[in-house]
Figure 1 (cartoon, rainbow over the protein chains, first blue to last red):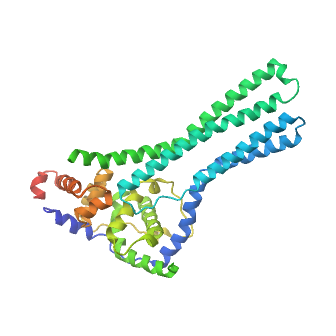
Figure 2 (figure 1 turned 135 degrees about the vertical axis):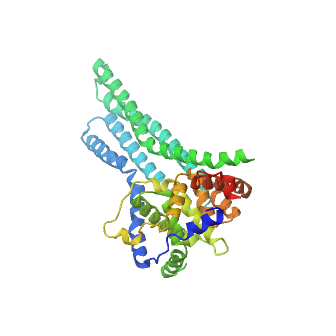
Length: 199
Length: 170
């Protein structure tokens, strides 16, 4: 194997066989919905949580007797609905076209991951404000609660719980996206780094 | 809007022409036969999806390798494997069986390269020009040529460890 051309000849002699077209069309028809399902399944955890908490909030609003408690529950239900819609819209973005160059493809992927990370962080922390306000309205909307020390302690614990919950949620949901972004960034660096070095 | 049968005919033609090269491509990126099958299918699905956007005046080979590299190196191929039990996958994508021990050595050497170098090596081994390589990877033709020179020396050294690479690649 003395010449590069020998390598090419050697390489290209491998893998000759006839393709089964019918089988390929079947496979493609079966595989495409599978891909779309997987894209959607990433957000399914939130849809499930939203459904459970949302149903509980609506049920509690129905049973509530005081106006500020109604307002609180309504605010919480509205926030959950808005987060669900925003998640759905963010997740429904069409995948990037695959026929661009590797460099363009990597840049587009990284930009997409960055956008999604920013969306997750901002939407999560902004959603806490109306959720917390709704919760406080529910707690202190019951006459006499504001005067009790125990209620204030409970409110502080619940607020801390929401903050910790949001921190854990964003950490959990962003971990796979951050990993993908880092992998693609390394690959892009490998591609572009050599270009810089050869100049 | 073209009918479905038109795209199916185009796709079949594309597979007939390029499937052997794509199988070699997948062999270089995945050692495990199941992963190799998955990658080949992912590329085929991506080709099918992109086919309506393909323009006849563009190079079919470059277009195909851009898609194959983007699938092999990025997100689409990293996702969890999920198979459909109805399709006998082994019939669709049998592994490339090497008859020549030197071909197996070459495949092993290519597999040991870093992902970007591996991509470049595959394009070179399939006979693409440096301009086409640059177009597929998104780098300049000059950069592709420089990298290719180093890569050929490296491959020759890997295949003939007892001798110097520059003697072998001229």
